[in-house]
Each structure stands twice: as structure tokens, then as C-alpha cells.
Amino acid sequence: MKKLLMLFSLVLFSIMLIGSASAFMISVTNYNPVNQKATISNFAPLGLRLPLVTQDIADVQLLTPVNNKVPLGYNMVAEFKVTGYTDYNNFISSLEMYDIKNNMASDNRAYDFKVLTNESYIVNDYGEKCYTNLNQTSYCLQEVIGNHLEYKEVWEPLSSLDFGNGDTLNIGIFTEVKNADYVEWIPTFAGVKLHEWAMTKSLPIYFCAFFEVDLDI
Image 1 (tube, one colour):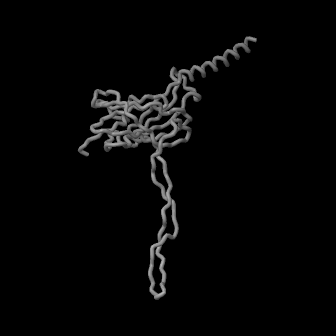
Image 2 (tube, rainbow, N blue to C red; image 1 turned 135 degrees about the horizontal axis):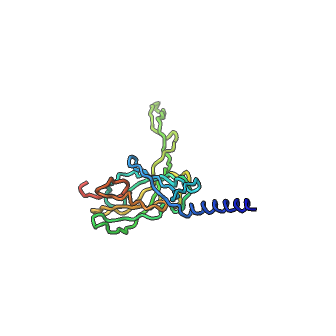
Image 3 (cartoon, helix red, strand yellow; image 1 turned 45 degrees about the vertical axis):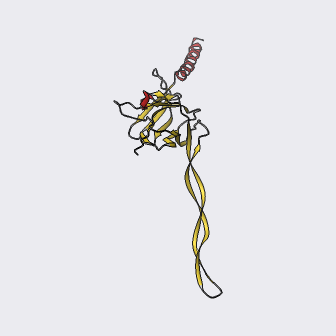
């Protein structure tokens, strides 16, 4: 009877341990400054490193320059690639903007997330065809002899902020760029607000995704 009680207590403790690990699970980032890529992972603190609660969520890589100069008007100010390793709802939960020239005051302008897609279209193929008229005069014309598909990159509105295992998406941030803008972006991916990627003069700039507009360019 005592052995059964001890076995039951051990099973109950194991269940509580796994439950506690899940409850204390947090998301962390590991950043590579060479390729500007951050790996976001779930991690259980307090020494709990169970496979059930520790896994990579996604890689997020900045594709545009850190100091990105953008023309005036509605334009893409930053592009990043997301590679998903697990299903995650509302992966991009927020995007904060700050006016660097105005003591980092909050900038509440509207913005859009768009995803890069490939759109197919038909292109005609031309070839030379020669004929002889009633006067026995020969002539040649360039005529359509067939067609083929070609592809072009198109930015479409991002319909969902949910990402799945195996998803690889290029996402652009589009907004109205104004004269003399100097804006810093702080995104939140998978619950992680990336403060370490904000611009700091005394530290390396990792992923601030801000844009600068200069009328002299």
C-alpha cells in the first residue's frame, strides 16, 4: 500500500512539474548581428528544460537596411522574413513607432502589413512568318506563335497575423512617409517586445527597422 501511495505521489508530482513549467514558460530571443536574424523560442526558467516546453517558435530576419532611406509618400519602410517552426496565433501582436527627432515621442500614424507574393501573367511569343502575295512578292511579319507564363512580385495585404509550422513569408511595413521623418520601430513578435533591437548610440544597432527621409537624396 505504501509503494502504491509513493508511486501515485510521484506521478502527481510529475504532472504538477510539467504544468508548472508550462505556466512559467516565457519567450526569449537569440540574435545574430551578422545576418540580422532573431530566433524566438519558448523557454522554461528555474532550470526546467523539458522538451515539451522548450522549442523554437520562428526566425525573424530584417531584409532592408537598418538605416533605411525611403522616398516621400506611401512606401514600404521595412521588410522582414518570418520562418515559422510551430503554429502561433497573433504572431505579430503590435508595432510601436517613435519620433526620434521629438525625444522619442509616440508616433501613432497608420501602417499596413503586406506579404510578398508572385503573380503570374501571360506573355506572347513572337516569330517571323513569311508569305507570298498575288504578285509573287514575298514578305515577312512578326506574329504571335504562342505564349508562356512569367511571374512578378506583388505586395498583397496580409490577411492573418497567425503563422504555422513551415510558413516562410516576406512581410513589408507600409506607411505614409512625411518630410523629415526619422522614426524608430519596436515590433512585438510572439509576445516578445524587441527592445534590444532599438537604436542606441553607444551600442550596436541590431534591428531597429526605422526609416530616415532626407530631401537631399
